[in-house]
Image (cartoon, rainbow, N blue to C red; front, side, top):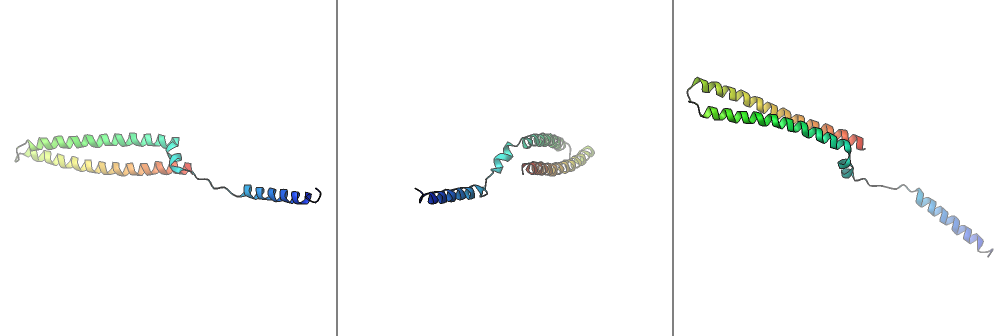
Length: 126
């Protein structure tokens, strides 16, 4: 038994060293960013704000589009040589330019807002 004691101690020491080395190795963890991003509460709040603003802008451009269609129908029903028709055509062209300008501005604004909100959320997720 006394002859085996140093072997047992050596095995115990070797086992403890192996266990220590195995536990001290850095572990790698995987984070599913898509799930974290989707579950993030601020993202949901900002998404709601974005949708509200986007819907309000869409209502405004839709209203302008309907006005343009109505004005177009009025112009089509008028006498081609009347002065009033020419005034309505000028009004139509002005409103059309305003509609296109607003639609472009809203589109650019929506894209910038979406990007800003996304960057804000990702900066907090990291």
